[in-house]
Image 1 (cartoon, rainbow, N blue to C red):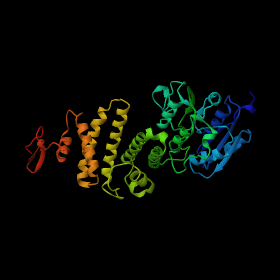
Image 2: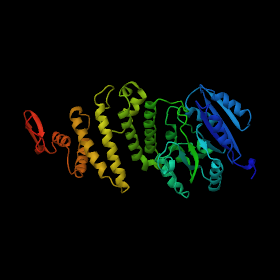
Image 3: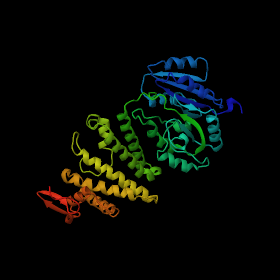
Image 4: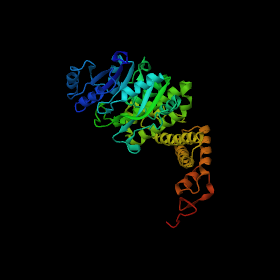
Length: 408
């Protein structure tokens, strides 16, 4: 088969702070055993010599095109590449990574044979541990069904675009969100839904290096965490609207609230009050059972935190039950979170009566798996009037009858 009769593959590389990597990246692509390639280098306003190097490299090979844009981030750079790509297939590549020589030939050949819209390969990761450095979802069987691959990808296990090759038709009227720093996760669901046929190979064909942590121009960890939350909430919203995603709705909700909790645990609380995007994502999108949304600078934020913890555990138990997996430990933690919520709510009074009854049911379910209660748990249950007989009052203070010295 001549080069002219082969499908054209467009390889898109966004570049930021890439002067130490761009020459090797281009060599990795041009050395592919598949000959019919166009390479689009997107200089995302990089302040180093990346742009000059791109122009110099392109001058010696007609397959290379260079686009210079003001710095806007990896999503905008990839979108420029998509706007100019002429290929039958689309492939994304990070400037500090390495593509093994047969990757494009093997994957495109399989896609043509199977008439597939999306192909995914195994990837080696310099920072990964276990499985010999294999990253994310380790594909052990090259004969996975299309629906099995779709299920794995819709669970968000591997949203990265750089270990895949896409048929160009998947990208018609679809682009990366330039507002989200978790652009891969944000777009993954829609791409997988569009693909009619998906294939996988168990071969390791891509190397993810992490050498250039500045390649996408993002050093703001708080913003990335908030945008991860936004991406899961976006998937949850899609699941509420699309029948194909209905079975994933509970899972996306679980992931979204887990992400919410990570934000609350790790980010400064001033972020919630001063950053409108963060506040909206954290306090209006989370599906939590509360009567009134806490106002900014509100002490009721802590109630939201424990409600979110309880909801994550409730969803965990539900998902594990459905899959006939062990969930005893999650029930014990659910019991702890439930009594904390109701104790805090005695002060905040934000949870509806209906929801309070549901939470008390969760307490009873979790309590049946608790052989021993901590002193704090006994006190909280007593406060909730679940086990009032276990408490005494001594010198104006309350104590549990068993195990508490009363001579202070």
